[in-house]
Amino acid sequence: MIVTMSTNASQAEISAVVGEVENQGLKAHLIRGTERTVIVVVGEAGRLQGDVIRVMPGVFDTAPIVRPYKLASRDVNPQGSVVHVGGVAIGGPALTIIAGPCSVESRQQMMETAHAIQEAGGQMLRGGAYKPRSSPYSFQGMGEAGLELLAEARAETGLPVVTEVMAPEQVALVVRYADMLQIGARNMQNYNLLNAVGESQHPVLLKRGMSATLEELLMSAEYILSHGNRRVAVCERGIRTFETITRNTTDINAIPVLKSLTHLPVLLDPSHSTGQRTYVAAIARAAVAAGADGLIIEVHPDPDRALSDGGQSLRPEQFFELVQQARRLAAVLGRS
Image: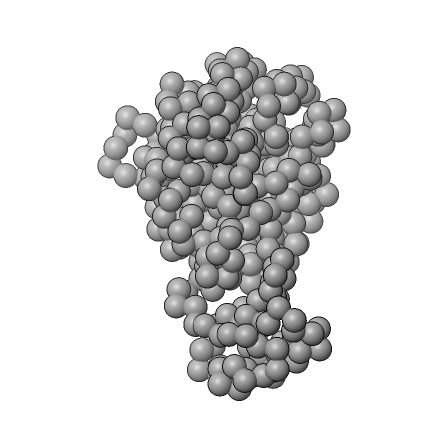
């Protein structure tokens, strides 16, 4: 249930409603907007005594949330949420472009890539220090040494860093270095990990699993939100279908559908969704046109020698051109 408080509701009245919700054995999530305060009530439906809450002082209105993802639902915040990461806003009128290599490989590679991204107009730096790979014999990442290089690149360029965390026990370490935690497609339903990043209160980028429905994606986001961590963005990265020419199939429908279902910012990863650099720019343009809040793109100074996913990584000059295209298209749509 959503409890909307009156514009002039006092703090004592808000606290009284929260107390009543908790007395009923439910959880109250407080969301303070510019005009009103909203209290989202979640928990076992049979416990809820809505009539009691409805008549409490300071309550303007109550309404049920029919979708299973309560906190992720757009009903909670019809205007849409903005996630702030190291001075960068994800969501709202501006398009956010996150870019970097699939894997951190060396200091030279990271510094060269980070400066190229900054000069092209990218706003955040991505790079994998821990890599979940299909083959146990593939490069698995540099671990903490890779995190240190990401932090050094941030210090040189000012670009906030997003990197993947793969296990609950890694969260505390990765939080020390990264501005945003990424949950990869293979871990979208790793509920212990979702709980851990939720408890961290650190910004989270949650990628859609390769065979996950949109509702399953939002239910995974709900795990993070249920810990009071409001700084969550979701990412479409292609799904597994019968098609084999591309690495995955870009579900461009997911962008407007997710925008209608959730207040969380929605990004698209055209690198993983196509698996081939030839198609990355076209799908990035499609994402902007469909209303995505941001893009996450793989960039490498020498893709042919990359230790992972070189075939889908753009060269710096290709990334520069993509950013220019995104700028022009965003302007046509009234965005920046």
